[in-house]
Each structure stands twice: as structure tokens, then as C-alpha cells.
Length: 406
Image (cartoon, rainbow, N blue to C red; front, side, top):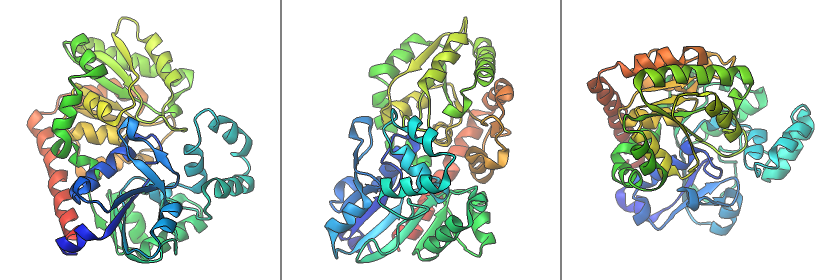
């Protein structure tokens, strides 16, 4: 595609940034910047629901079906902006788009009833697709180009056959398909679908938005943390899956040990406020057990505040893939934490590290191994971490140029 064509054609960035999840909110900022977003009047942001997330650093997001109707026969390019969308089912998508206070009752009522669950999800989303964050066939009247940019799906081989067939058909009809890790690439290759390997767009955050993030570090909660913790702090996050008493007690014990040894504080933050993401009550319970360790519950949900929190930390520990990627982009140590009972093969963090490298070995550990793993990650030479930060940036720029400017 020529630069002139790219500037004049209507482009739709489509993804799961219609709910509060740190990584999903960040990804369209990167892609928009790369295609000249703010100077490009023909860029639309689309999800499955109409949402305005500008107050947390996101975008004003249009429901895809409504956007298609409003654009009529306009020629469009559609870019899927990344995320683990290949394995996100209609049920999961619909629940995560509910108000947090509604979701528990919906899950309690329908989770064990697959037929009713499916019917409810179809009605909630207004779609019959099993994998709704992949462009539904026939929705737009005049699609010139459909690209999947650095998408993930490490467990695609384990989803229901009908959903897997739908995913393969949609990817097979696309103009270009890029995946963010070798594991997803191998799963698709086993089904005869070849695709490019592309770093997750979040690897670009320091290069593209470093100045903006530094500005956020000098205001609000992050500025207070830098003053409160002169020796630094660990940025720590974990999803609601860690919420049982035994796991939380173990988490607190591991954090207490490594924070005390290094004379740093602990800052607990949410990487997602949508249903099935992070639970503030679990954070409070961990904080209560961190006796003698300075700890702060970070309330801010703004995307750029979270980036600033990570960028100015001593290290990141948690279950968020994009927490790890952003820490890595700023050449900081990080350790992924496995959910209770989670296999390493089901860890997005492990898949990312196996593809693009990490100074920590292994990239994701059980909660009981967290302190030792953090020590190991922090022992890596800064030059090694700088090199690990540069490599995916260079790979991203090459792959983006190859796909979007030809």
C-alpha cells in the first residue's frame, strides 16, 4: 500500500479495548501512532460494545456492527491490533463487557449451563460468532484489507472444534496474519495455516511514549510513590485467580522476603478492572499480611499512570503479560507468576519470553518460587536487559513496515 493510499483510506482498529484491561488499552495507541493516528482523520476504534474509555487513557470505542452500518459502502482496512483474541470465546467476551457488579450473578447462573450460556452471549453481543474479536464475515460492505497484527492464541488447540474451525476460516480469509509468539505460530502451522511472527505492539511503549510516561511520573499517585519510597518499589499485580487464602498468604510471604532483603516497598496495582481481571479485595488481604513491609494499594486505573508506575519501579512481578512487556521495554527486571495449577505451556508470559527472550529464567514461576525468581531477574546485567528491550523493537519496526507500507 502506498503512503498516499494509507493516508486516505478509512482504517478500523479492532480489538478488545472496549473494556478496562491494561494491555488492550495500550495496543491501539501503538498501532495508531505507527500509521500516523492523530494526523489520520480516517481512523476508527472498534470493539464489540460502544464504550468511552478516554478517562482511563483509552479511546472512544464504537461497536463494530454499528460502525459497519454507518460506513455503508466506504472502502475500509481492518487491523486487529493484537491480544489473545484467537481463544477469547463469546461467553468470555460478553461477561467481561458487563458492569463489574453484574458479572458475578451472571456467571453463577450460567457458567455450568453451556447452552443457556451460549444463547445469552449471542444476545448480549448481538453476534452468533464463537470467536467475536475476529472480524465476522460479511459485516462490512467493502473491505479492502484485513490484517491480524501480533495476535495470540497459545491454547487454540484446546478450544471446542467449532470455535477452532471458525478461527481458522477467518484467519484463512485475511490479507495478512501475524502472531506474537512461536507457540501460537506452531498451533496454526499444525492446521496448515502459515503466518508471520511479530512482536506484541507493547514492546514499542518506551520508544513511542517514553516522554509522555515520564510526565505522568511527576504527577498524581506515581509522584507520591517516588517520594515515599526513596529506595524504590516493586510493582506487583495478580489476577482474581489468586484469591484463595493459601495463595494470598504465600504471595505475601514471598513479597515480604524479597522486599525486606532489598529495602524496597511494594505497590499493588490492577492491570484490569473488567470482570475476570484483578480483584482489589485480594490486594487488600495481601497488604494486611505484609507486616513490616511498606505497601501501597495503587488506585489509579489510567493507562499512562500504570505505565509510569511500571517504568519507575525496581521490578515487576505479576500475571499480566503486558505488565511484563512494558517492564521489559524499559529494560527492567520482571517475573511472571503462574496461576494456581496453571501449566507453563498455558502462560502467555512464558510464550512471549520463549520467543523474544528474557533476563529471568524461567519467565513464569509458581507463587512459591517468586522471591528467588525476582532475585534471579534482578541479578541480570543492565546491558543484557537493554539488549532484550531493543531486539523486539527492531523486529516490530521491520514487520510493521513489511506489512503496512507495501
